[in-house]
Length: 371
Image (cartoon, rainbow, N blue to C red):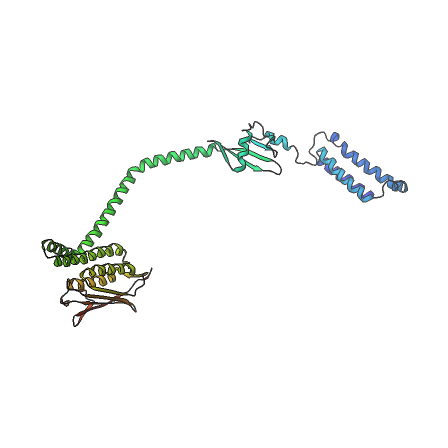
């Protein structure tokens, strides 16, 4: 018991001597009172143990409560610093903050804060609210209650205004350069279109000349059957001119899909049927197969050369195009009384004759792959 009393006195002495509290003797009265109660308890236990048992014999509970009392006396007297005075600190802050209950009644507010109104405070539940160009109103849910504070964004607004001014100035300075760039881009597009147009015109110069001769003959002809024949011939030539131009435009990137080439053959065959010819096609290339532009041109030009040599005496046309390893194999069978051996074909073409059937065959590299 003496040892416990000694430790208690030493602890209280240490706290009292190190406490940064003005007027120590006055604030230590509560602490001395607790020590006196403990001393009286110990003396009574020592000198009158039987009598004290009638009141309380639970020594552990008493000393636990006595220790709590001592700490509370130190806290209340200021010898042990605690975080109190929140309300005064809150009132002294320069931030505009409001603490409200669940019914949005203001319970605490910082010094100098002017409440913006209950309805405006409630809107902070949905997110950040900008009251003017320099103030944001933010809120947060408490349990219970709400807290709302105002955030000054004057510096940020000033920076944004300066950035907008700089942007306008740069835009004004760059406007002539942008106009020049737009003009150059438009000229570049026009030049590219002219280049492709010239390429298309040069590639179909022979057919254009033949088309004009056919149309001149059509307008000067009086016999109806001959006029129909000339008109059908003109349709065949027009189909080639149109589709050859499409191949040039589509194939400007060095690749043409097999589907585009198939459309070329289909349209040419449809117009060849105007000459009362039976036309068939066996096209075994997948639509997604990518062919080099030169390969597609060679296949289509070979067909056109054979058709032009046979015009207008064509009674049957059969096309077979399929893959043959790394090559594309094409066979064009055309029944005509005309001599196709004198026609100008690409160097890859072989021409053979079986009675009145001309067989035009060629094999060209497939290249490319699948897109």
